[in-house]
Each structure stands twice: as C-alpha cells, then as structure tokens.
Image (cartoon, one colour):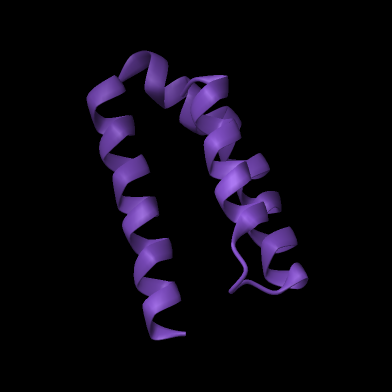
Length: 67
C-alpha cells in the first residue's frame, strides 16, 4: 500500500462529519495498527491486498449506512 493511499484513507476518516472524534481516533488507530501488515501483504500479494482494501472500504460504507 502506498503512502498516498494511506493518506487518502486518513483524510477520509478525518473529514467525515458523521463520525464522532472518538470513532475517528479509533479508526485511525486501527489503520496505524493494520498498515505494517497491509504493506507486507501488498508487497507479496498485491491483488489480494487490493481486495482487502476494497473490502475494508465497503465495510466502512456499510457501517455508516447502518449507523
């Protein structure tokens, strides 16, 4: 995963007006925790990593809709 992609995800979280500050902090912490593993995965299995990124984006979208 590129630094640009990580930055985009961070920006989306920070700019999302529907999330509480507590939830934003939680998501940013999770992103920080996930990033080393996702980076390793991306280097060795780019297609699978991209699939996981899409899945995570879909999960966040679904969570927001059900909120």
